[in-house]
Length: 335
Image 1 (cartoon, helix red, strand yellow):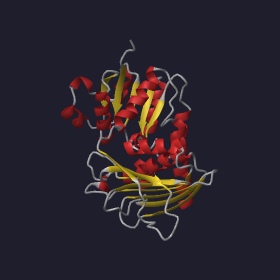
Image 2 (tube, one colour):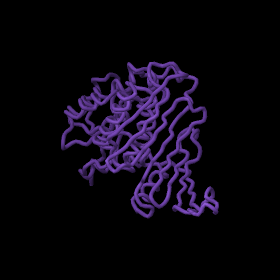
Image 3 (cartoon, rainbow, N blue to C red):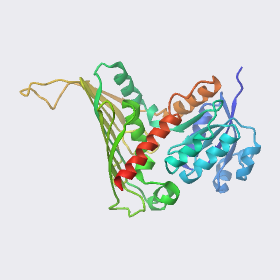
Image 4 (cartoon, rainbow, N blue to C red):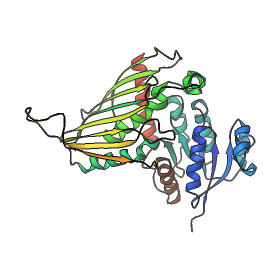
């Protein structure tokens, strides 16, 4: 029988608490042996005292197999390196540092006998999973274009968030949220090698962008377009794919608050080429989803990679590196 993998959670904000819940759903395979956060007060209120790690250096006195790193971008690189140097498996939230240089620092410490995975959970959302199956089936042929809109409206405490301070985050809405959409573009189309980008900051007046528009192109001549925004007063997640013989549309995103609306996928074949017919009202399939297992599926995958000593096939170092490379190129182009 394979022993339970011992885990620590480093950083217990919004994402740390989400990962904690997912680990509890996988308790037959894992055991949480410690949780660390610079703000001990939030740990005292919610956790068994035996799990609270009082200081950062105390983390490495514990016997653990996996570190779940849920810290701000300016800290995550150092923590990942510290864990890898101690020969631990690492699951790190996105983005993997403030910039591509941070990620390259991590690469130096990756080891063949240890796994590293990054938190791109959107790949495991039910509508995305179904869309990927349709694309892979080739029933509609190759993707020609893919277009995405991903945005939010900030909030009462939005200005106070470390995510909007370049010193801590490294970038604005594109790096924080748009990177998920970039990862999905790559998931469906492969890597993109040409990047055009415009950014603006007309509302929030941060030292990072509150809007970014990207146009991408790859070696297969597939085009992608992304609008990443923190000024969409109605939270929006939408992907539109045009294929040679059909189309796929993902709308809405199951989330903790439900603010992105119900998740659904619409797909159908290319039709109505006779302009005398109802071009705007094709026959199509619509599927709605009401359960988000993405967090659990992502962690389950990582646990299995470690348990059975398999190569990390999804959300691996190369996926993170290529997504960050596009972000880096986008910021450079926008400047």
